[in-house]
Length: 143
Image (cartoon, rainbow, N blue to C red; front, side, top):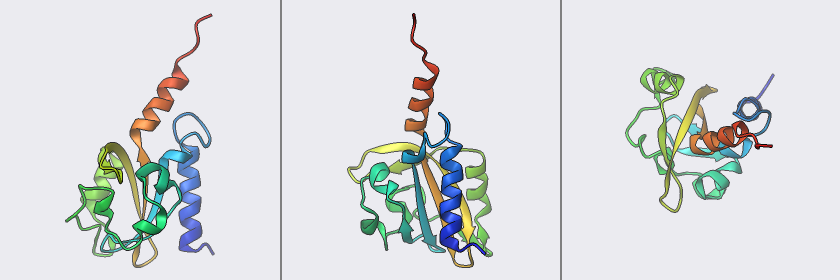
């Protein structure tokens, strides 16, 4: 039986391998966070440091709106499920604004899932980095 932590790691590995550019190409641009139902960060991956400029320990106990300013008042969970509107926006690959520690913003894609009874798993992918890697992979040298 998989624990919440192992499910989180497995999901991140699957999504990292599915990133543009092939297996593992987008792993550095995919941050993984575990939140409680109120949006407070319980745990996050080391990738958060690269993506957002925060060491993981500095994010524990902060609200997700520190990283995703569009979510300060959004209820992540409604009736023990992910907020349907938020789930729909994520499913439609709507870009969310993400903010680095230095204040710089970038476009991101979110994947949000229920993780156990009282937690939420959030995967954040930097769309700008993914687009750049896709463009560089598509550019072929002229001989």
